Amino acid sequence: MKITDIRATRSELRFVVEGDIKSVKIVERVPVVGGQKGRILDELRAEARQGEVVIPRFSGKHDRLTSRFILDGIPGVCYVTDFAPGASRDESEYPSSPSIMAFGANTKDEIPFHTSQGGVGFCISAMMASSPDICPVIEHVYNGRTYYFRRDAVESYDQQMLNGYRKGFRMTCAIINSDFGYGYTGDEEMMKSLRHPHQDRSFKEAYMSAFNVVTDDGVSAFCACIDFIGQRYTRPDRKYGLAVGMILNNEVTSQYYWANAGEMTCHDFTREYTTVMRLTWQVMSQYYKAFRVYVSMDHFWTGTFDSRFPLRFYSGRNTIEEINGWAKREGDFDWNVVHHPYPENLRYPDFWNDRSVDFNFSTYRITFKNIEMLPAYLSQPHLLYRGRPRRIVLNEQGFNSRGDELKDLSEQQAAAAYVLAYMKIRKQPTIDYFTVHAYVDNPYEFGLNLGVYRFDPDSPDHTGEKKPIYYAICDMDTDRESARVAWARDFIGHTIFDYLLDPPIRYADRDTSHDGLSKEGARGPVKKDKENEKA
Image (cartoon, rainbow, N blue to C red; front, side, top):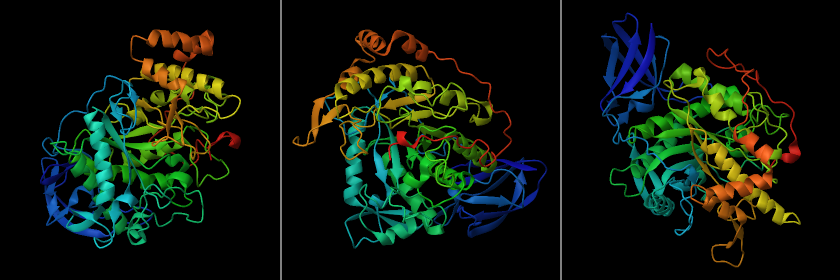
């Protein structure tokens, strides 16, 4: 016997059982992870009829949608894996886009880029308050409990979301958890629920915490925040715009910086992270069925940010395999991938000279030079979701221009790099969009200048002169594109430009051995050139 699917309707949960079964005991638990089983919420007995066991979705004010279920020790999935027709408030298709070009929602209204995609970043610790007595709040009830959301933060997000929606942008949002900045208010009482209990706060560069799915309060608070976002930003009247996807944390392959959960193996970290993605997908899909969730990764593939610390930094390839293993074991869902294919050295935009990349699945990094490797890898049969490859978005990457005597050259390199990268990415049908990380150079971002405008300290919004990359972006997808491509081809060199437009992909190391979770460290990191990295 085996449980193959758990389908949610608006009023029921339907367990699809393979094999002969008549009556079964169902144990419902809080979906905490990290060595805990989770508090028992309920125990039910139900009859099986025609291969299905059906229970009510609601118990009073409690929605069982995100719970973990065990049926008399019967193996198989233990989470909701599907939504029946009519179970989601909005069942429209994922919106199409005529271009892969993307920018943030707060770019100037008159910007002449040909984009219909963008994003807004949410910070859970900036949104939620422990009490209505400390600031003006918006109340939100989740599973019978009232949570408080800071009105000023929410209204700021409203403005950004609505601005993007009015521009016609398809909005994929990101959500982080930080007490380092990013709008953090100092509400330590709220952080007791939100902060990962094992976050290494002694590590001064732990810019963000992992989400807390280790405690009951953490799971409930996280789900309440996602439920608030789902209700507000998928409304049928689009009063506050429309969110079509959510990126969870930032670059979790370097979790010690961007999703700190303390030292743990990739195997254990991804169990928690897969739960975070699953909960987000479950909560959001009840409002918008086409909603997509994403794991966020840096540009390392078989390498890591620092191979001396395998409990802090993970390879992209291992992370993908572990997530896939957990999802397949506990109930697959529509998770997708965010990748940041910065050049191997973030300070130099000429990615065509990257040396630590190759066109096979064992490549140390995946940068713009070999970006084709990511969709190729995700198209392998064991990684498909219901026969379809995982979708990819490139939401944060850019081309640095230097502030020294190489400034002019580096700005020209950045413009040519954008053109070649754009042409390569546009040929990949599973990559949905490609955005330049910064609108204006940020003098506080690790010494990098990733904007399309120079930084001007005397300008009200710090927007200075346009850089050459600005004009390169403007020309793509227009009748000026052919001239711009010819310029970039001359600048880079015809031979390397043409080669990288259609590089050979070698499948000699295609991995066909997967039957569940990958072995920890089986595809571990190789050597590391620390001088190349941004921290």
